[in-house]
Amino acid sequence: MTAQILDGAQLAKDMRAAIAQQAAALTARGHKPGLAVVLVGEDPASQVYVRNKVAACEQAGFHSEMHRLPASTREADLLELVRTLNDKPDVHGILVQLPLPAHMDSHRVIETISPEKDVDGFHISNAGLLMTGTPLFRPCTPYGVMKLLEKSGVPLRGAEAVVIGASNIVGKPQAMLLLQAGATVTLCNSKTRDLAAHCRRADILVVAVGRPRMITGDMIKPGAVIIDVGINRLPDGKLCGDVDFDSAKEVAGFITPVPGGVGPMTITMLLQNTLEAVERSI
Ligand code: GUN
Image (cartoon, rainbow, N blue to C red; front, side, top):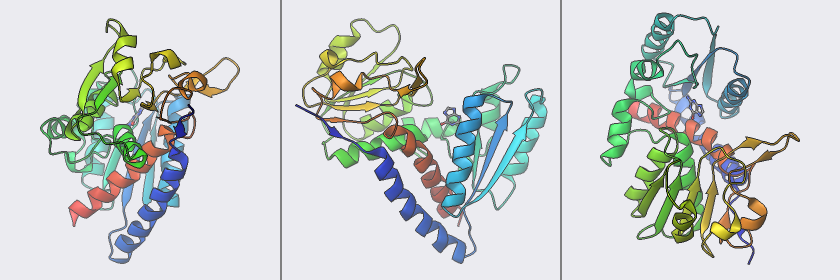
C-alpha cells in the first residue's frame, strides 16, 4: 500500500488565495488587516520564520509591521511595545516570536498581549477558551493540522487520535481540537511507556516531537492518517520530519511530507486568524 500525500503546500496556496480576496474586500471597506510581528534577538531559525510570516502578510495584501529588538532588551521595554501595539487600531494581530531570550518571562509577555489580538492563541484566556470548547483563536499549527485532516476526508468522530508531544504550542491545543471534533484522544509525552503500542492503535497520528524519523512504518496502523509536524535539519543539510516517510508511506492511508505538509499551513492559519481578528473587531 502507498499512502496518499496530504499536500499542505497546495492547500496553503488555495487558502491564501481566498484569504487575499477577503483581505481585499475588508481593505475596500476601510479595514485593511494588520499584523505586527516582534522578534527579540538574533536566533537564526526565528529570523527565517519571522521573515516568512511578514512576506506572507504582504502577499495577502495585509498591513504588516516588523519590530526587531536586540537580545539585550529589558523585559519592561518589550511589554511597553506590546501595550503600544494593543492600542494601535491598524494592528489586528500581534505575534511575539518564541523563544524569547532567557532573561524574559515569556508567560508574562504573552499575557500582556490583548487576547483579541493574540493570533497565536497562546494567551491564557485563549488557552482556557479552547479548553472549554469555545475557542477565539486556535493556535496556528494545530489549526492547520485540522484543515489537513478535513482535506483527507477521514471522519474524526469516534476515531482513535494519538498526539505525540505535549507542548503548549502544538500537542496540547491539538489534543483539544481533536477532542472537540469527536475523536478519542491520547496525548503522549516523553515519559510515555510503550509509545509504539499507542501509535499502532491510532487512526490519526500527529507527531510533534523534534526527533528525526523516530516514528517508523512498523509503528503505524495500516490505513492511518499520519501528520508529521516535525522539521529537523540533518547533518547533510536536508530537512526531515519526525516520521520516517519512506517506511510510513507503505503502511499509512494518508501522510504529510516534510517539507510541504504542515509547515506551509502554519503561516496560512496565522493569516486566517488575523482575518478573524479583523472581522471580530468590526
Ligand atoms: N516559535 C515556534 N513556533 C511559534 C509560533 O507558532 N508562534 C510564535 N509566536 N513563536 C513560535
